[in-house]
Length: 587
Image (tube, rainbow, N blue to C red; front, side, top):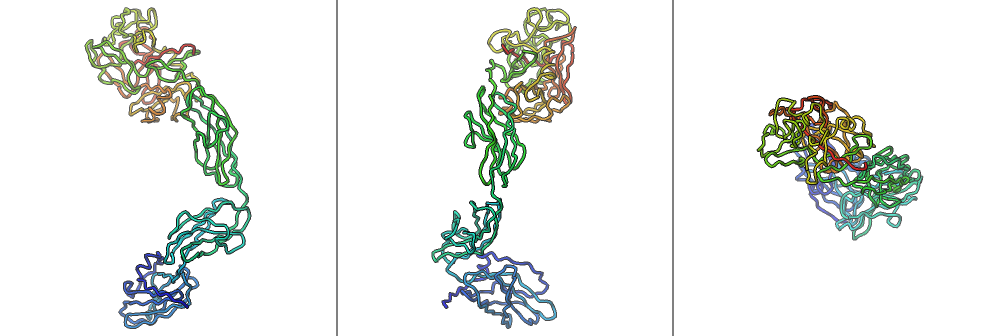
């Protein structure tokens, strides 16, 4: 017999073949000097030389050897020992095989001392490959895990698994080659299996000398897998740019549904090559939110679900997005109904005024307000203010205090047209702040909401989503969100909607504001406080907003704070915030 001998230090052998060491309690001072141990390994035998340390008498030594890592079915070999050295020869081994061994030493009256478990590999020109396990992904798909633990002294150019239905498979049967060669673990996926069949599978590896195989593992497939069943239930909350699709996976087809969702297109019969949104896995209900849609456009949508068999679709539904009217300069996107047959656009921010230049504007961002600097009111003040007394439009309309920077502690000084109980829109309409040419497109384009309109949009307005308003913090600013008629939960989910007693922090909104809410018409009224003559209070905590109406020497308005939204009347000289609207003709 041709015999190849290798001298391998123990430490290298442990590193190359990742020895598993079963921990044993060491109760004696006996020890093997691992640095002094070396192994001579051939194809069918091995010899181990080494040294040990023990101050007492050693009665006997032996080595327990097995191809099983837990030393099941092991064979014991006696060890020759003398003066701290030992030698053992192990015969009748198989070429290209991993062997595990442990020292067992009798020290007299005490129980035997046992070492950790070590290993060596007998010589071979062929690789050593192990079939580790077979895992069923579903009843007709299996995943086989294997490992090349020794390359036979040459590069492993191919590794994989092979299988058949009659036993001892080879690469002449069905096989899958892994994408990479070399040493280490790998996994192959077996598909195209038939139901209720016993299969035999084992790993293989090739080098320049030939092919070697691992142990055979048997497994049995189950019933045939079908495509899952999924239903496109309904389309809801359609707006000009978004909609929600309700879906339901009824049956998984006998294999796990690992992906589900909806796909849509402007053409019929959409599939997963079109716009698609994946939403989890498994059976049951789910909702897909479709965003960035084109206004006034017909869309087709289908639910879909995937299992190992493939992808299946629900029935096709269609819907049309709403028309998106172009708002005028300074107005928000999104229409808001304020009464039967009346819709408005809200301005892009609270009304602000600069006395030194007699300039009106809307705040650049909806969440901005002047705050405590509203105390700096004067005819030549170069800053901006945003809290005004009633009817301080800047037009002379019969009141003593009609300028935005006017101050008085007498409510009678702010009576529109000089008449107690006059509304902003009475007579010439000059008392309303919207009478100004705010955006450079003419006078009288904007107006202040009536109290009836405030009440309607907060209490009575019907919307497809059922949402009228919500408390919120936008970029850290407390305030009240008013959502447009076509608002959809598909755009952004809001908590505690239509709840007057909700706190501001129930909806904490950051960059979502500029990406989702504002582009879809959300109106935000910041809690800008109130001014009494030259004293500002509650900035950041409470919001006070005018209506166009009053009774005797008090104005109507809406107020909101940390735990309520309510209607209130205050003396005309109190400075409140103004948010103007613009009527939508024909709506």
